[in-house]
Amino acid sequence: MSFSRVYSAQTHLLKGKIVTIEVDITPKTLHAFTLVGLPDKAVDESKDRMSSALKNSGFKSPKSQNQKIVISLSPADLKKEGPYFDLAIALAYLLSAKEIDFDPKGKIFLGELSLNGELQPIKGVLPLVEQAVRQGYKEIFVPKENAKEAALVKGITIYGGQTLKEVIDHISKTHFDRKGNPIEKETKKILPQKPTEIIHKDITHDIDFSDIRGQESAKRGLEIAAAGGHNIALSGPPGTGKTMLARVFSHILPELSNDDILEITGIHSIVGLLEDALVTEPPFRAPHHTASYVSMIGGGTNPKPGEVTLAHKGVLFLDEFPEFEKRVLEALRQPLEDNIVSISRARGSAIFPSNFILVAAMNPCPCGNKGNKDKNCICRPNDLEKYTRRISGPIIDRIDLWVTVGNVDYKKLSDEIVRSERTHTIKDRVKRARLIQENRFRDSKRKLKTNSEMNVKDLGNMVKLEKEVRDLLDDSAERLALSARAYHRVIKIARTIADLEGSENVEVNHVLEAIQYRPKVNN
Image (tube, rainbow, N blue to C red; front, side):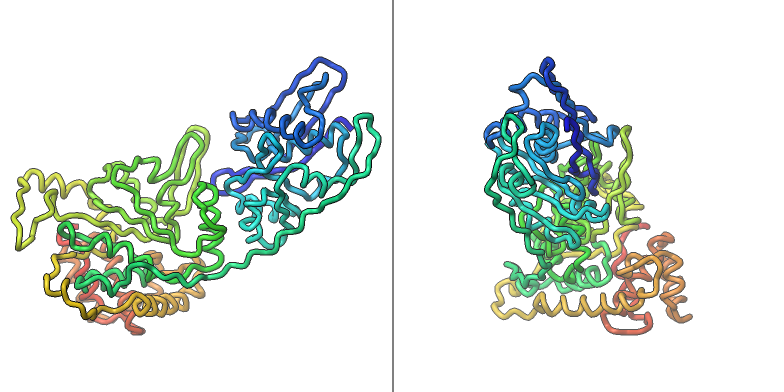
């Protein structure tokens, strides 16, 4: 056999793509070594890595013989990126050169080769294994360091190898000497990786809600935001605890479901941010206000996810909110409204998930002292107007709750008796409210999970307001000049407040509290 076919895979956007490796060898001719199929630099260099790895693993180097080698990676119109294919290319070459014999059917091979034949870990293993299962493959070989992550996927046997020689000894039925005669080999089989169970760990955080003195109105706003999945903005002078409140906010969010854990882990694996085999807590992303458009939203020649996708199912914290580039802020419209971000480029388009809770923190003015009874604001009227206009009306509308975080009395700061509720107490209330919402949306075709995800039709079907409540809401909306979007968001917040209280109906007091969280500016 001078022709062979072996299977590998690579990541494409946030999913896996199966790639077929074909090798054809023409012996006794001038040496040529060609790799085709739109390879990038890392893929093209696999020829050199593979040649050295084979030589140092006891096999003949492809570059030391007079033969023409053609390696094809298909589909040919898919850009091949990264070092995913080294192991598969090496095995396909050995099979074509009749140096080993094995059946590649139903098997996927992934891994980068070092020059001495060791297998190096790769990014994005989880979505690659999921794609292999969807397409009916039975076994997958990955570097040892990636085996635990790969074993999260059920329905396929995972083998974690440390070297090229180890994988060959496991799969090859026969080895051949340089004359083509079969030789005995000492088989050292790789043990299958045991399935990795998803375990929700009890994590102790450094900061508890009770450690934050005062700011009860801000804590209440954060509780409502967590219960209904609402976006929230914290406005107040510097040093009042806005950043600390935002960081403890993620601690009161309910535990992730198993499906959410796999989805988030896959995203972080592709980007190369996976520190452990699992991401079991809601992500907390806090990019600096100098972050670029592409790093925030995603993009590039071949679209990659940005911060709005890395925060999926978690929290996106934007400190110094008005200081972000206006283009970045305006690009938040789609993810805040639709929970996705669509990226279009000349080479194609991509849709990434971005269902997060936005927590924005900002000063009331450039100097931070507007409305401060202890310090005077030194901002000029022109500076104040320019600062206010940095956040457009559509963005203001998409943030459900606006909370003022004022200065805390020094006596509260020095009081050793902590009177605030602890994180786990607030989290229990949030979980109960989420359970009420889950029951409410059980028969929904749109698979809703939180009140914030309801559209106008959902509100009409699932949130019935008594005449007294509707009249109050209409009068308030007219007086505050609420937009249609803001009007419906008030209803969603009121529904969440009612859920926290365990109330079946939205009452007048729920609407009154919800209206208090609208910004004190024109909508």
